[in-house]
Length: 273
Image (tube, rainbow, N blue to C red; front, side):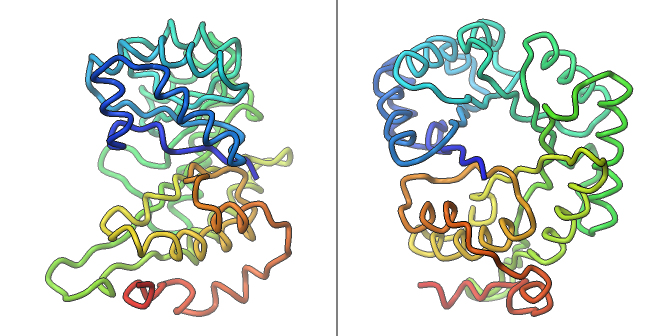
């Protein structure tokens, strides 16, 4: 499984401070730490701000001078073109939605730079939440790629992990991740074409509302099931040693047994500390 480090993102105080000071060496240090921890690639998420976006080419250059890794970043950044040139062919556009116009533009950009492309299974007014909905939207994305002659081997499909939050109910137990249907959808999406379709998730999306101490156990639990379903790549925290140990193990697991249980589908977050 491809492990993509998530730490270079603007909500990280270290990254925010580095962007404010235009200190690309500090960001390169963080990139190196993640690669040394075992990450194969790095996600660079500088948010929508123009100042950070203009700094992207310098950040990419600093990182590439320090480590050899696939870099994931958005095509919406004002510094995108120069950043792509600085990558020397080691870049992935992260991420386009499945909105037809945006998807076609993103595929054109990816073809222009010979880059891979991550597509989120979401579009205006539609965020899938059932196996059928995920698979139908994935098929639409694949058909668009075939029509636009975008190589399927350069495509990643992201089902968009998320939690449901019930603010009127007390306690952390009001949040639930329906991981069973996601696992089923991943298995089916990978089979939509004979050559196989690659899948990816942003693992930390499932814990946005949780206190820090509760995130690690949830991430490990969910990733173990996603791996068993055939997940190809995860954007995650490579500095979490326990998570990395679980991510790198090749022990076989039984997805059907895991997703039969409602307890597996809905982790009891209040018990995770």
